Image (cartoon, rainbow, N blue to C red; front, top):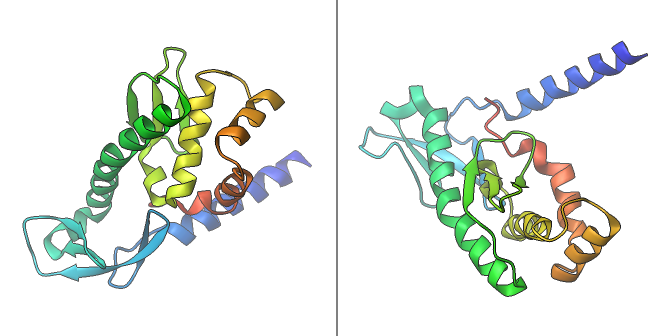
Length: 180
C-alpha cells in the first residue's frame, strides 16, 4: 500500500543521507566539476578552505566545515555559472535576464517568467558537460515554457546527445550534496 511505499522512500532518503553525510575527515572526498577530490586537514590558517590537488581545510575551521564548503561551492558557482550562461546564450541566440545562485535541493535550475535563470550552487559539483546541459535546458525555457516534445527537440538541436546528461543526473544527482 501507500504507507509501505512512503516508508520505502523514507528509508531510501535516509540511506542516501548517510551515504553523503560528511565527517569532514582526512581523506574523505568531495566532488567538484565531476571529479572527486580528497580532503586534507591542514594546520590553522586564515583561509578556511582551498582547493589545490586536494581540498585543504584549516584545522581551526573544522567545527564549521560544512559552512566553509557551502561558502566555497557558492563562490565557485557565482564565478562559473554566469560565465557559462553568457557563453551558451550567445552561442544559441538567447537573451536571459539575471543569473541567480540558489540553495535549491530538488532542482538544478529554473527559469522565471521574467527570464531570470536560477541554478543551485550544488550544480558545480557536476561534470562541465552536465552543467552546460542544465544551462541549455533553462535557456530553451526562455522560448518554450513547458516540457513538450517540441521543447526536448529544441534541447536536442542545441545539445545533441543531451540524454546522456539527463541519465547522469538521474543516477548521480542525489550524491551532489553535502548531506546537511
